[in-house]
Image (cartoon, rainbow, N blue to C red; front, side, top):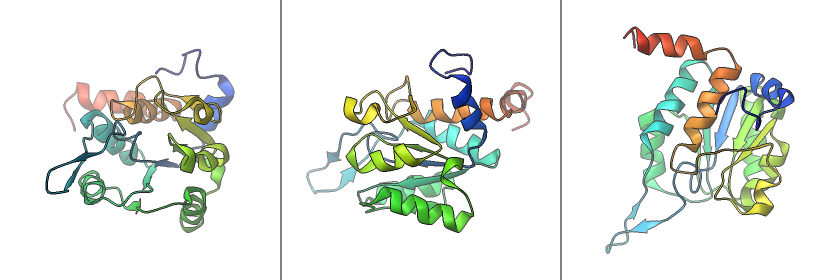
Length: 185
C-alpha cells in the first residue's frame, strides 16, 4: 500500500510516523492461520519471506519488532531468531498486558505502537495501540476495531505491507530503495 492510498488518511499517516514498535500476533498474521501437524504430532508453520525481509528492513530503520502470540511453538522461536526479533512472547493470553509491559521496558507509550492481530485475544491491543491493524481474514467484528486493515492476507505479505508503509511514512523508503538499486546491501 502506498501513502497516497485512499485507505490511509492523513491522520493515520501522522500516527504511523510516531511508531517505534511494531507488535505482531503470529497465527493469522505472520502465517495464514492454519495449523499443520505431522503424523508424529510435530507442528509446522509456513512464514512468507517477504514478511521476513520487511521486518529486517524495519529493524534496520530503528523500529523495534515484537511477537505476541497465544500459542507456544518452537517454530516461532526459530523464525524470530532468524529475523533478529528479540521480543518474543508466547503463551500470551492477555496481549494488551504484555504489550503494556513491553512498552514500559522500552520506555514507549502505547501511541508509539502499531499492533496487528486477527482474533479476539488481539482486539484490546488493536484498540489501544497508536495504530491498530488487522488483516482481511479476521472476522468482521475484529476488523471493525482496527484503524487499518491490510490489503494482503495474513501469511501472504500482510506484514510486508505494514513494514513498507511504516518505512514510507517515516521517510526511510527512498534510502531503502537506493540501497538495493545501487547494490550496497
